[in-house]
Image (tube, rainbow, N blue to C red; front, side):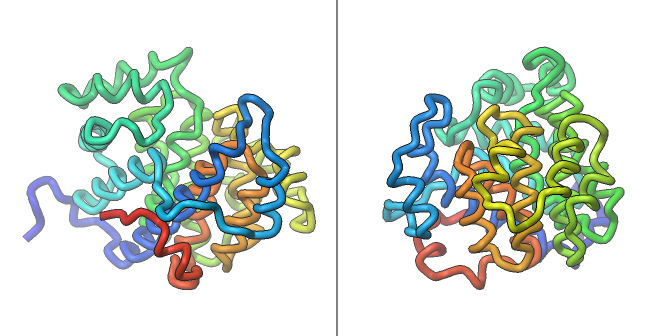
Length: 306
């Protein structure tokens, strides 16, 4: 018997794909987080040794690679999908708020420190609070960074994947481009599961605006382009906006659709907001390949999901 409130239309056959995506998203997030303190993009200071280490594929230091808010929020979204088989916005808002309250030190951005405490007692207030966050709502990359497992969940139905991604985004990111970033990543993950990932395919289902424009620019960028150069052209998350983050992360995923390790190293070469870009890329590629092929050292170092 299903728990109260649980939908019976959940595509149960895609739960493994969603879990693969979640595990790889967390691995990318934790891997990227180890580099993030070195990539002081706000100050423009990156040690030469950091560039050298990434390009030589020397693993970052640290006995444990801790994941960040990217994974924390992805876990909350995955929980709602598991419970209901779809996005239930008030329940999602409650899960986000509870997750934040349990561990607010995961690297949440300023906007979430403002929004999520207010949803703890009244989850339904996201309808008024999220649109008032910044001017017109957040157009940041937070909705995009957590959504790949949802795309994997709804992989058989691309329209449904896009619709559910938009619904999940609105709880925290009311700006059309914050929503567009989530739609793009969810569609990319769904296409990845299907073995059909292309940048033009993602762009076709992304709402008009800067995110879609960036994806179309990425579609015209040869995969022979060095990742650092692609990041210069497409953005690397430095501006903490969906249009500055999603195109490059989807480009590296499409560049390495069958190799999570290669995809994550290529994404790290773009520097910038590397935990977020690696989380997005990891969630997309991992939806297809999982983490089983990754070197054991990576998996041993990543903080467990619980």
